[in-house]
Length: 264
Ligand code: ACM
Image 1 (cartoon, protein in one colour):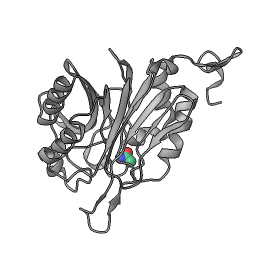
Image 2 (cartoon, helix red, strand yellow):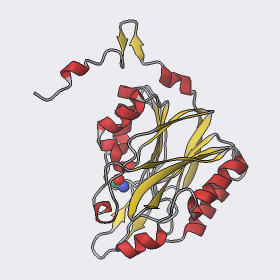
Image 3 (tube, helix red, strand yellow):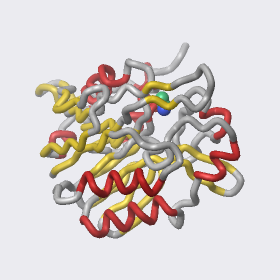
């Protein structure tokens, strides 16, 4: 199947423009799975709770979920994308999965990064894997990568591929993802953004780009540059993620010695 990411520089607060940019980028391009950045339609650096309130949406009946569900239906593709979600009286840093049948599901970011803690509630969905026509798709969001338990949980839950909407500012993730993929023998697509948001005096955020697709062997199949706005699609075979053996003696999941994984 063909899977990839769209790395770009969203305009803060301009959902129509950002969703329009995604729609134009994929016109006339065939793919089965597209991963978009965290908060791809709103931008990232909120400076007041009122801003979050203005831009957050309910799922699945909010503007962005409806637009992506429609795009998924029209193009017959699966899309994973990040958005600020309003649920009851809380905001979540969420990612949705849409597909040819429309809206499929939501994941709420478990590990909040930095000032996200001012506005968002820690996710309460746990790590989820969806069994789709193209394979088992798990989702984690940005900073979740730094907690190995996140990807491990997704892999043990059967994920073939981890869709990873991101707004990375620290430099470490792109070089760490190959290890995450190798130890779990899954594919991952990190969809990061480019650009700078300077909405808070003295606290500019520079996003590092370097979106990538990584194989279960820990090979970086493709990596974007730091500042390129680019749609990248690669052919991948998800069956490679279902074989956890390294050699006739070692199976990375069966060899786990969980009785020793306790703090003493
Ligand atoms: C991040 O979690 N957006 C770094």
